[in-house]
Image 1: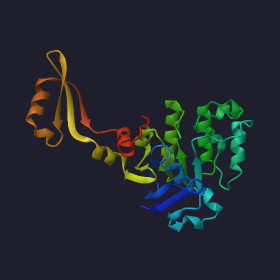
Image 2: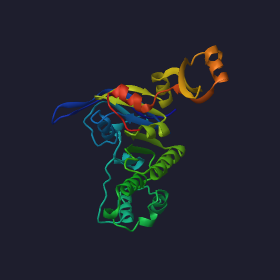
Image 3: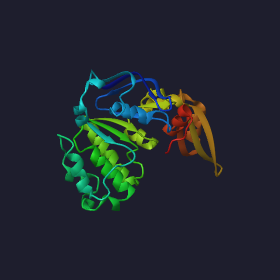
Image 4: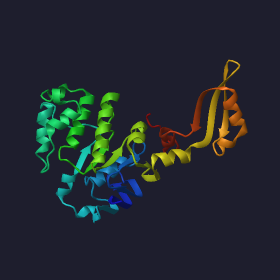
Amino acid sequence: MEKVFEVKDLRFTYKKNRIEAVKGISFEVRKGEIFGLLGPSGAGKSTTQKILTKLFKDYHGEIMYLGKDLQSYSNDYYEELGVGFELPVHFSKLTGLENMKFFSQLYRNKNDIDDLLKKVGLYEDRNRMVAEYSKGMKMRLNFVRALLNNPKLLFLDEVTNGLDPKNARIIKDLIREFKEAGGTVFLSTHLMNDVEELCDRVAFIRGGEIVEISTPRELKIRYGKRELKVEYFDNGKTKEAIFELDGIGKNQAFLELINTHEIETMHSGETSLDDIFIEVTGEVGNV
């Protein structure tokens, strides 16, 4: 699979306070995948994104974009990027439509603004001043802004933060649609449900170092327990039994239990991404 980014031994130090925020991380992002960079505040996520979007250039290590050194690209690089960071930046005294028309002028490639506003449910509010928008509306407008230039690569940070479940679903569906059309997404979020729904692979970063990188499914299997908990009724009371998952089909105690008792629930020992986040980073994510 073609690699969009190849990052090798990336390091970055903030000169003002001499803090090394990124400490020799290496990873790759493949074309057409949704790649999640996860970690607690201050772990190096935002710094890494700013380096990959060429906002920070004084780094050490190697970054290849589509097989070429990232530093060799001119400002044309931004024609291929769409960026939606956590804090929306708009002109509050302009309408939503006026904001999008202004930002659209910065690019050669242009997407259909009206179509994008309709997809995120803002078309009817397009002529309202952004100052009158709720936080959720501003977040959706921010997502529209990221797609204005019909990009090949999206950088998204807490893209559904502050959205109700219905509007969060709209954004997540649009991200999937973008991926299915061949786009690549670099996602950073504390919302583990978003990660599980969207990401093909994830990297956990802690203290400027990557401590885990794999698919969500493989991580859940590796950090989970290979066991099955069975809750069943016995003389009007709910009881539970735990069995090893390996060889469960030949486990006589398990077979006898399910054949002689009314089963209420069964749960495997698969862990959640939230639990994995806590274990590998020492911090609490948000389910």
